[in-house]
Each structure stands twice: as C-alpha cells, then as structure tokens.
Amino acid sequence: MLLKEYRVCMPLTVEEYRIGQLYMITKHSHEQSEKGEGVEVVRNEPCEDTNYGTGQYTEKRVYLNSRLPSWVRALIPNIFYITEKAWNFYPYTRTEYTCSFVPRFSIYIETRYENNNGSSENCLGLSQEDLDVREVEHLDIAYDPLPEKYYKEEEDCTKFQSKKTGRGPLMPGWRDTMDPIMCSYKAVKVKCEIWGVQTRMESFMHRIVKDILLAGHRQAFAWIDEWHGMTIDDIREYEDKMHQETNKKVGVSDSSIQNDSTNNTPENGDEGTSI
Image 1 (cartoon, rainbow, N blue to C red):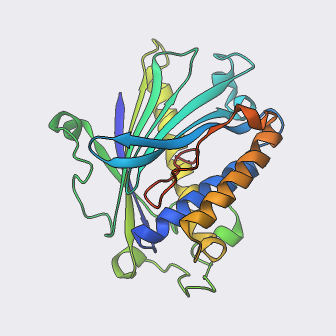
Image 2: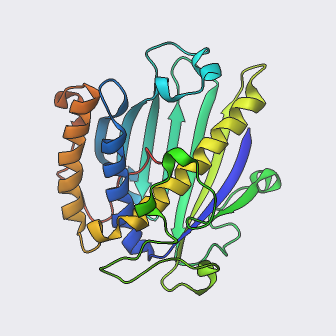
C-alpha cells in the first residue's frame, strides 16, 4: 500500500468551497461523459454516521476503458468501470474506489477541509502506523505543472480573475498572503496486491490522483463566477438536472438512479468523480 497526503490550498473559505466543489464535480462529470463512457450516478441519498451525523451517500460507476494506457487495458476486459462510493459529512468525507474483477485493487481517500494554508499536521487523525509511512505533498493550483490534456487557458489561475469576488490572478507565494484561504487535506491510500504490477500500478494511480486533484481544484476556482452566490438548494436542483442529462449521455436510464432527495439539508453533499 502507498499512502500519500495531498494538501491543496484554495482562495476560498470552507463554506464557499462546499458549494464550489459540488458545482465543479457535477459540471465536470457531465463534460467528461459521452456515449458508453463517463460517470453514471447509481445512488444519491442521505446517510447517517455515529461520529459525523447526517451526510450524503453517493454511488457512481466511472466508465473509462479507452482512456487508460495500453498496458493497463491489456489487463482488463473491454466493458470496464470503477465503482465509486462516497460518504460526505462536510467538512469531512470518505471515498472508496474499487474494481469488481480486480478484488485486490482499491483506492481509499479521507478528506477534511480547514480554513488554513495547509499548516495542520494531522487533521485527519491518522494512526501512528499511517503517519510512519505517510508522504506529504503540497499541491499549488496556480504553479504546479499540469498535463497538457487538462490545461485550459481560461482555467489558468495565474491569469484568471473573478468578476464577482475580485480574487485572482494568483501571484507567486499566494498561499502565504491570500485571504480567504482554505486547504483540502486528502489522505490517499492506493492498494494493488497483484504480483508483478503492484509498485507500478500504485505509483501510476497516485500520478492520476495528483493530476485530477490539481485540475479539479483549479476548475472550482476558475468557475467561481458561475457558482458563487448559489445556495445548497440551488446546487441540489442543478445536480438533479445534470445527473439526468449525464446518465443519458453515458447511455443509462434515469430509472437506474436510486435517489432520495427529500431529506437533503445544508449538511449534506456529494463527493467524488474528481477525487
């Protein structure tokens, strides 16, 4: 198992990011989906936890066979999807990714959001065993390199400025001077107990996770003028509409979604698909 803790700062408050994250995940899922590939929403319903109270549970299928490297595609069937299960008790979330035909492969992510610049040393309460092997990596949404396939000039945080808030462009050293500032703390465990490919697969998946974290957080900020000012009810309405449209693009029926939105409250939220 390879454990890394990624810390991603944003020029937002934790409360603002709750809306921005939901908007980003929903819009991104829709944009990336097409016939036979993309994100299918299977369940979206309230859940309870003895430690964290009321939250939102989502289950999705992420179809991505043709987007994988050839050496990975050689190991998997043509009809391929990853199951994503997420429990959101914002500002704490858990997300699990599994693959039914590879039972020894999984990605487990614990996330907590705090109003600081990444200075908390163990806000996720990791065990001493995990702390002993944890690698901490600070990601910069403005200046860390991003693969060309993810780059869009309008989402470049060194150039973008919000018309609604006036925030941006982000200058060098912005994480030490920006107000407001928040951080996404993500402990990511990748496990691939397959002889011969374990090290290669675990490192490969962490590279994917890192790229997706950078791209997703950049989009959440770059799209701020689209979502800033929305309420949780506005987001729920947007989610429902886009989930139905996305499932149609992927090629599944709306009836396949098990959705109970009658108890949605400001504490509930969606999570996943962009890690």
